[in-house]
Length: 313
Ligand code: RIB
Ligand code: CA
Image (cartoon, rainbow, N blue to C red; front, side, top):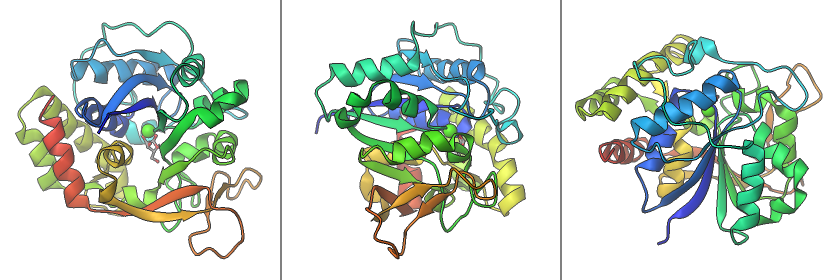
């Protein structure tokens, strides 16, 4: 099987970091063309710094990392230092990056890659707010038919929201961008809170990361030790939910996941439910299905894959 060419669009974020590490540890299945950064968990200067910290942790200072949009399409930026810490990568003590940012804007890079590679051969993997993706689609509508698939972390249905009662953070930060993406006609796979809240880093699982004894294993364990506070307090969960690594794991082994191909639309009008992913899980409307909305995973299989791959770095 040839490796799937992907662009990771990200707002690191400890869980983004683990998703990036998993991708870089899996060259048989995933060819990371480049990483594009967006404002989200923390402002752009930090997400674009953190993405390079993670690449250097993985020994990939050769990776092209681009800075993208520093605010949502049409509203003020909302960040999540309360979850990820001031740096966005609190937990491990990692050195500042020495690798530079790649020249140029992330949006132009996304457009250029989609126009350069044969149509249907590049997958976009957004792990944060969808601002860069939506901006690329607005600037170059021709790229929509060139995208193989969008596999994203965002939204929630049975789980409701994690930043408001009805909205998940990535969608809430830029609902207009999400609306553009979900109406683009591009095949979409959604990893919502419904599945990511089942990917919990319990103590034995985090001990397995630490037991790798490598800089990567120790750093990932420290990241999740920090990152779990928010969800443990809010949900009483057994550990940090590894939201974004569900995207990468899906690319490696989709059989770990299950869901339904349904219609998903984004609330962009009501302040009360702004950013809600209105998922027609029970197919009660005649709205056209536009996304594979994932609801479940084999959590043990997910963590054994993740741990085995992190051991490679
Ligand atoms: O709601 C979880 C999502 O928001 C994850 O992608 C996390 O990194 C934050 O971006
Ligand atoms: Ca993220």
